[in-house]
Image 1: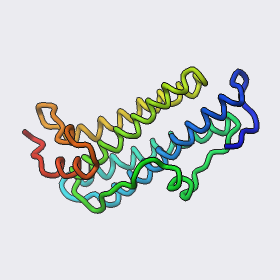
Image 2 (image 1 turned 180 degrees about the vertical axis):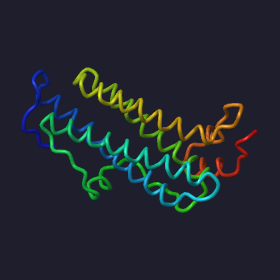
Image 3 (image 1 turned 45 degrees about the horizontal axis):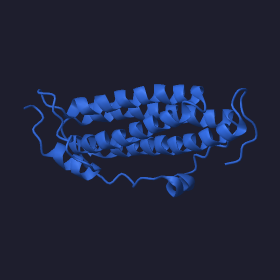
Image 4 (image 1 turned 135 degrees about the vertical axis):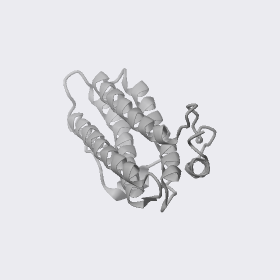
Length: 186
């Protein structure tokens, strides 16, 4: 990625490295925003309205996070890309795999999506702390919001004993199936 300048106190090589890390996070956030909107359009069944409205709030929050990351890349002298082709070419994960499904199935899958996005943010924090504390702080704040959104999703899934039907699952499809077939009230 081309770098034209860097802020005071950040050398150009560090700015370039941080911008590359941020571009990966921008890809993750754009993908999450689109996935959340896809779920918003394709969720059905009991609990539809509360999930539908919850997802719109999360879409708006994740869109704001993407904007913050893109603007940080520009501040570091980089050129952020939000183009669909760039995202598809450079992402490290598969497309969300669930179409029209009941609330529990989508929320179970989203639990795994949030695990991945928040986990990647934490990895980026660890890498950027010594290179650019300002970027690490931005990512730390965003990770807190991502984890809050995941908690909102999990609150719909957990039973009265605090157990998640998705906890043993590794994939979106596995989590969706486990969540859709579990009685959440026990």
